[in-house]
Image 1 (tube, rainbow, N blue to C red):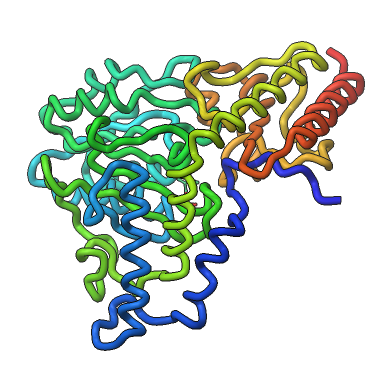
Image 2 (image 1 turned 90 degrees about the vertical axis):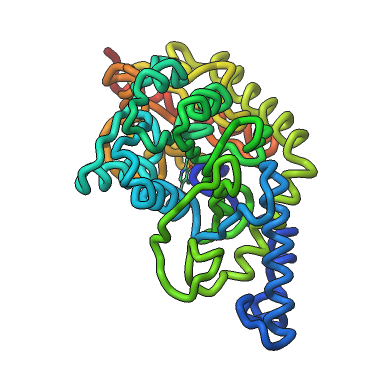
Length: 385
Ligand SMILES: *Cc1c(COP(=O)(O)O)cnc(C)c1O
């Protein structure tokens, strides 16, 4: 039997409606969106523009401010490297946080090899960045602050509105990685003073390999040096023939969230609370990692005293979960996010991340909770302290 899928932070299945919307663009409507001389191109272009509008609407942006990419990793790289290159004459300092995704931390590390300075703001135990620490980190040489909207391991929602107010006041650009947050909480790039925002289709029931970067056009107009040169697609920010079916899928995924995102988040949040309550009722000595209130509705991250996550995941054949981010789940290293939150070795090596999604049912939650409780008790009997 297929395990119960509770790893929605790693990826999500393509929604049937999204797949339906995409299919014609593989075969029948196969045109190149950059072909201006015939209807094949026009049909593809109009689909891409409709998708652009759907993405823009979901985050309160203008249509011309959306640049399609291959996913959030590319969007993060384009934002961070592209801004650094464009503003190198004005400053050489970037501020980020200790709990960012590798798609942000690694380009920042790359910048340090080019002579930039990077300040990594620490986080307290609840995994929520203090905006005042961001303020303190900004200097006269700072050109960019990058703080994620919601964390992919502990689901904590960051105070981006407060951080956006600070960066705007200091005249520093603000980038946020919203791959986990998009559609799950209201996002408004105007109200939040966000200048660049990364998102990905496959985290929101769209296809893998497509995403977008929001790039503010006015007040201020963000300058960006393209990291991919070629035909000058996407306002010159991202050359390469548009992935039309993928972009159509991303657009449809965004439309679904604009219509149903709030109701869906409520339902998913109830399932998450049900899972936690059932775990607490059936297992002793577990810790909730990350803030209780400021977290994504679909996220539950817990550590079980005396139980390593690799042992638990190995024993849990009937539930697909992970210990942290998909990128690092193969290693037995404790989560750097949990370490950054100051959690001790036992808690950081014992974390299990549950990601509840659109297609999770109540019955699956109950069965998963019971399976986890059973495995934890069995592992504790095998190795009593
Ligand atoms: C998944 C994820 C990414 C990477 O997105 P891809 O589209 O897979 O490249 C980046 N940041 C966060 C927070 C994510 O959750």
